[in-house]
Length: 345
Ligand code: A2P
Image 1 (cartoon, rainbow, N blue to C red):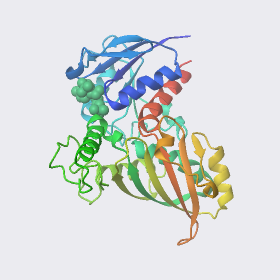
Image 2 (image 1 turned 45 degrees about the horizontal axis):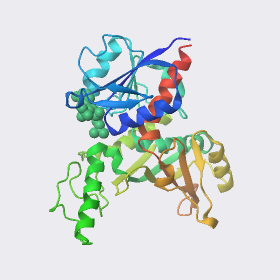
Image 3 (image 1 turned 60 degrees about the vertical axis):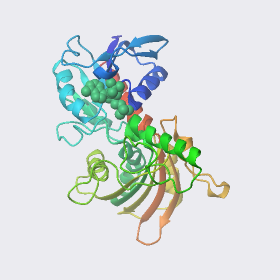
Image 4 (image 1 turned 90 degrees about the vertical axis):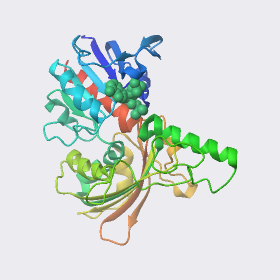
């Protein structure tokens, strides 16, 4: 069996480090790993697979040595510059950024939903937005059976999705509160914010990524457009409100769906319980439902609070929680690499 060479680009970031952890767990047939980051952290050391790796600076010549695959988690501008260079050198890139997701020639893949797209790649595969990944894992089996007419997303997204600076802002806010013991700590006067425009500690910010001309944020429009592309439903009615909340890790989502066909709640629960990548936690009698701290560290998407939306015909509400750094980014990318390995045999 061929042993593959894999580059991890952005290895020092939140997603890059999670990718290394998931790679340690999955034990793919990869014989050589190379870890890249920017000049800032080139030369730093990372313990991985029982040995010490020196992080290399990513440059235009980094892919000359010939990699089979690369996982990019270094933002859109780095991806736009370096992913095409990697692809030209015969490396298949799985990119976590938004750089290529809506490019019609680039597959946007969630392996439980549209694995058939993987084989269509021309050197770059896009990993979808974290909040979209967990939602479509739950929505795909429902769409196949009941045909979705409309989706309303409301998200409660963790700070880890905003990278190291996002986590820093929450930690700093907590520290500031501990020191002041003042419940009116909504002001950032006492500490510096690195990522968010307002303190994320003690606030919910209806603002993820930049605002667009249509009044939505880019994150909200990512959910709309990526859901349509992944489900192969280009005209599907989808709307979203994306909110950053003071949670360290794992995104929670309230999802309201209207179907073409009528359904039975028990059938929906049975269908979701047996679908790939989903763990059903729906036991209100014992007050059991998905929560972020339970989702963190696992790759399955947790689904619960499943109930009929009585305000419309064929309406459904449910709650969906996923580890945004694992299934929402690193694990999804590694699942794609694993499929690429499988297909290359
Ligand atoms: P670095 O550690 O050198 O800054 P996060 O979003 O969690 O902060 O992580 C971003 C990741 O992307 C980091 O590993 C960061 O490396 C990497 N990165 C950012 N800009 C570049 C670049 N121009 N080239 C390579 N890696 C980059």
